[in-house]
Image (cartoon, rainbow, N blue to C red):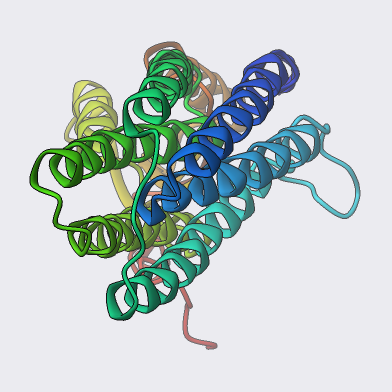
Length: 307
């Protein structure tokens, strides 16, 4: 567990990078909005404020996830990362609603844009910074299996695409002179942001609901068990779940009744060690049962009936 804790503490530097990037883009995108009076650029700036709140939330949750297991949290604190993703997803949806309302009001009452060239140039710089940070966070999230960093990276990448759409829209306003195009672009941006927020929320909920490990990881686990299975050694009641970067796997091992406790213990140690070697960040729980006892076949379900 100690290596997982070290990873989470290490990941805090990426959260601080996200905080710094959010502050930078807020300043630049707000400046772009003030220069142009574009509601599209305002929506872009508002999303950057959500980025900042999300980055601070990520930092807080990584701090909690890094805590070692204790009496009240025997399985560690890694699930805290799902709360970060959930809050960020919720904030994205709220921001999108605000953007949509403002855009509709501007659509009803259009206003002229000003200094479009300068404003777009400033926004491009901010978007490029977001792109670089998003790539860094996404790679770190995948490498260290952090849903917090992945959610933050996906949000930033959505922000990059949002900015691209806004830049095209505002540029089109400058070329066509059709002022209503600006709020229309902002509404499209709001819908896209909602979709991103919903996906992040879904990932968070699945984690909090103890979703099983990925099909790829499950296939690896089953192949390991198959390599140990023989006529007199069987497995059943296989269960798994994810909690942030941690994986939890449990199953029953059915062996000949004449095995000694020592023999069974050494067999499980070898099996569990092989699983941990091929599946990083996994906690393995096994239950030894006798092949000769009919009761060994009665506890496959999660809740065993009282006899």
